Image 1 (spheres, rainbow, N blue to C red):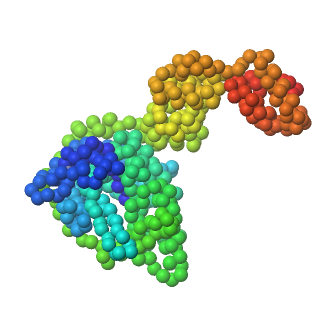
Image 2: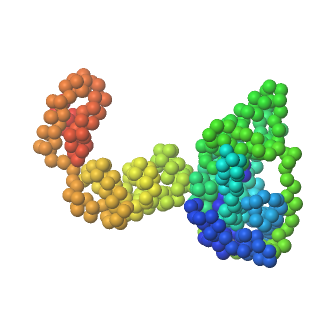
Image 3: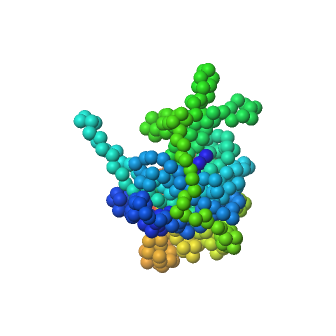
Length: 456
Ligand SMILES: [Zn+2]
């Protein structure tokens, strides 16, 4: 699998142009360098080199003493120079690995290159008047290419690998790796072989897959297509294929006969980079705890699904660890993070989350109230206690009030009451649901105890 990831930098790979937002007007983030005008000199972006090295180190790669850039020559309207500056035989790193579950996926290399521009096709089918436009805002945006060895064995593994990589890139801060924004694109190479055979079959390459779901579906489709072709006596042609989201199938784009010879040669305008050992060791030491390590630690105290979700984001993992460090129970903290914080993406301070979880656990406010207190706290930065005081939130915990309420619920639900008395304990759920409907602010624990007492 080849994965292209946009390095997190403020400016482009070889010039000072700012990275454009997705909706920026076309050709507003361009200069002489990224437009490929004659006589200009590219200068490598140190932040991009750093992002690439951090990624490589997190992937256990070896970093060579010397690395260089090369020209990859081809002709296409989105490539203003007529070549892309990439890396050929001396990449920034090689020979690493990433572990997913109990499988070790070897990483062949992580190198740095520049992105191309974008073509926009518009036209009028009826009058056969077609026009194509070029937007060079993306030309020269730094890309890391991460290439794995053929160690992935299924669509599931390929998706897990891509997800793990995304978590790792975000954790080390090398990329936002947002697939919807085109910051991470996958190109799986797929071949099948007979069970027991060691030899890899003829492969096809799928281009530019931009979601985990599409990655899984496209590989599943392609495996089945190849299997049917071989079993019906046909053969698999080595080619590049695209994925059609609307038709949910792959389709041929380019066959090997037309594969280009890129005539790679060293980029004469950029001297080879000497990678200072002290700098590399400094970067290695600065790497945060990786998602796989966080996840294993969290699995010891949380359900696996919660551990995976929280460990997948450095922000959530930090929030969890710092909230629990304040003495709040892990399960309750994780529950609030998974159900309330993660879906909104708005991260409260650990102090405020800890205070909120305690207010709910102690029965001072209901879960429902807690949810709106949390939202208000994130918006305004005020503490949950302040917000609770201001709104006069408080649970109904008074025993005589609760007794009247519980009796009303029993009177209104003769069937559930009879069921419960006949030993069907799940009938309590219906009674509690009615009680919550009547009094959302009732202290649920105290109310259910009272119900039980009255029913007995
Ligand atoms: Zn530029």
